[in-house]
Image (tube, rainbow, N blue to C red):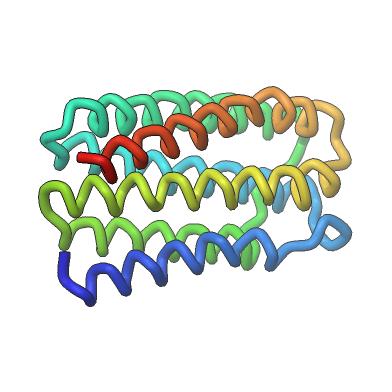
Length: 177
């Protein structure tokens, strides 16, 4: 992997890690939370689709396909919930930062090949899922006022924990090989 690709991946991870800090639990509303949830899932869907199509590693491919399936399911649940809440997802700096960081990550990943691609993708997944969990715990759950929205966040949180642990395990395997 070229140094510029590594730098771009680092920049994307930094943007994603900083994004949750942009919104505070006090200054966020349910419409903004809905936009953040949908955007965060779409970012991982996009990266997962690229990884599934690019990697030659069977375990990375399986993980990427799981990310696409699981995050598509969360987005479907969120999109179905929004009309019941009577809110329209409201764009906000956190959602915008997540989207930009995701686009930067995908662009950087497109420059990587082989084992370097796999490692960059999985490293990003570890950092991204940790950032999402931090956002859920510190911003989204405390900021959600609607009980159904809060329940959805609580319901999907264990999946994000499982994804993080899966990504960490996969990264350890890639680093040994």
